[in-house]
Image (cartoon, rainbow, N blue to C red):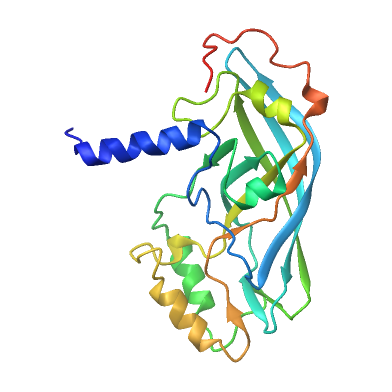
Length: 243
């Protein structure tokens, strides 16, 4: 496959930025300042899933809540949201500025299964169906508990999106953000993700009840203390390159 030289230069520039811990542009749907819907929470129990010569895998519980900081009701789907990205910064300020030590992304692929068509039919109502949606009044919060898995590489990732485990451990406590897909792209798989025509039509249809939230949502930074794993990964990894 032939790669355009300009694209190659841009890619190299991005990798240099990442290698210096400067973050991934829009790593997971960056939270814009002043958004009325805020996702915040804290990290709960952390358990070791596995360790091998290359990586350390941790599973952790997140106790979160959606909070309406606006002056109008907000409507969100009542579902388990797809978590498409996890990001870690040294400080809350660096995390909010997209200066990350760790970025993992895994947004969903297109799925045209019949269940999505059924869900679209169920949502196609004159008012938000209570069994599928939650309406948050100004100042209200909606709890959301989930689990995530983080893959820390002992030598760091080749593309620079994840610094080596030792560097992240040295910076602990660090600050974790997660990004959620609030409106499943598979409800309208042929649409431009930046122009969800059916979702926007439904948004207009329900506007007297509140604002239907369609955009990805990134959490506020959450304190992540990795000190209990300080003795792990101290052996020399197979590839001990510095990033």
